[in-house]
Image 1 (cartoon, rainbow, N blue to C red):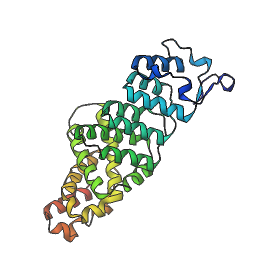
Image 2 (tube, one colour):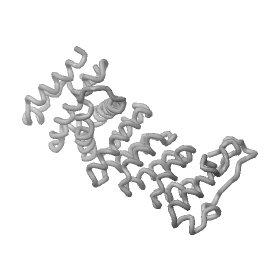
Image 3 (spheres, rainbow, N blue to C red):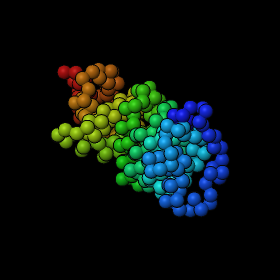
Image 4 (spheres, rainbow, N blue to C red):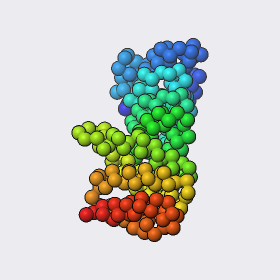
Length: 279
């Protein structure tokens, strides 16, 4: 990260211990003041125009680690406002640390505001970390943020990330999407948050169908997830006008033996609903 002053005004800070004393790392307020002085925030440590330092990757990573450890959420905001991030791998680690600390609100803030590109492998790591989180409420809250972040990624990135998930994770993903979003996105009334969640959900739904529909159809453990996928597909029908390719995935749904034996009416209704998307 380089400040606005250009190379001539750049200071290299390589070692965290060279700037922060032990006492700075034992008190949240002291640490925050030191961070603000360091980046020249509006609180009185200089101006951005005078040139922000060039921080080493290790230094930046340690700043974030200490913010989470000390629960310095103001410090976290300062780092975000100055775009102090390394790369997608660093973002993944910060998000995992926030998950571990059950800081779901800050997880969403960092994920949605961090100016970092994510590869499909990194996005998969984030999804996997959220799905493995034990607290259901926190898991659903963080998945909502993950879905919103997906709007800034390519469809290929999302599909490849979802493709890396195993069947147990896919089933959990579908169930959590249903619990998190269906009630909200089917309510009437305006709301940008609602529309954003709906759009992101559609992207994820398409990715699940692209990557895992065949396995879901043939898995005995996935019938409940299929029913919830059907409910989610109804949402997609109302959201997309051109999704004819979904017909190719599900047009033969009613002919699968495993589903003929398990709720054949469900299979037929799902197939008919998909085939009538463009009507």
